[in-house]
Length: 459
Ligand code: SF4
Image (cartoon, rainbow, N blue to C red; front, top):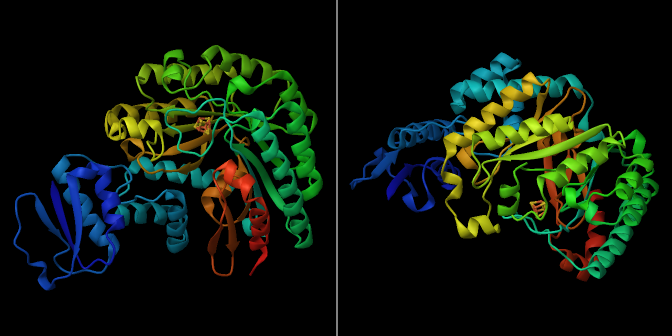
């Protein structure tokens, strides 16, 4: 057990997060101390950081990072950064320095970010700057959660669940009322939507009729034409995709869907608890190709149990062949609440070099195939402390995905599972609007949840 005594800090959270990049939870303890000169009798395995008593948090983290790297013989491409939005920080560096090269210098010198990650951030920033010029705070995003799935994935930490049809119908009826009420408030306050995202869960757990009714409800309540706005519906699980659902979405003006394979290896799909085969994924893509959706997104995961680099490469190759034009490469995150975490809490700490190689391969292969990286985020307990990167063919990005990471826009969240946020541009501040994760709680406390919609308009 290592003991890290860090001098002159008020909170050990960020330092513990940094230690977790290198060490397991039970291998270290971070202890804040406050002693002039940093003198302390030390046992073996104990270290004092910040003997000089500096109050510069970045400087202390750099010293701590170097110590952790010396002890473990490892590096992290993200240097001292442990937050989930590295690009948001990069934009702050861009504003501070006034140039992309200044941003790069600060990321390297202040946060010890590697050249490889800096070039990734730069590429994403350049793409975003080239496609988004408007003020994001003048418009809003709308998220609608459908928290149902056909089975539960091994790594899932969402509140999404398998539910009987009558429960889904009750949820759906409440959701329509919420859409109508939120839409009337939006009209009253002149809110203009920039994007709509229906996620979950698996929205295509709803039947074709319900999907049509929901799209109509959104269009009427928020006065939008689905064909004139970025409107995405996740058809995540291929075993929920049918011709009539795709037909309803297409005829209602939806041009963007997700079909999320995660892997094209049957053994992996079984192992992670998805009740479908790779052939179902192929059929889903073939069927979707008949409806000419403008964007089809595919989520893949690097680091799934039992997979090696060749499996990951095969999956990526096949997804390119099937025609996805927007591909998100996730690194497996082993979150609290998932079965994987319960069964193997330290899974995310193993084979991290292999997973880094998968992620590096994806970047190279997708570039060769004409894709560009367009958004990025990180998660806790992610293998190798890596990242998730969204790639797209130029022009096929998702504005919703960019905005949610940028945190400069109000996101109205309806249903269970989403996180509503109100953005206050004058203060550059976001405030969360309380929501619920569990659909049963949503149904039981619906009137209270409906009343909370007013919180989006309190200033
Ligand atoms: S598809 Fe997504 S939401 Fe559904 S169980 Fe799997 S990880 Fe959870």
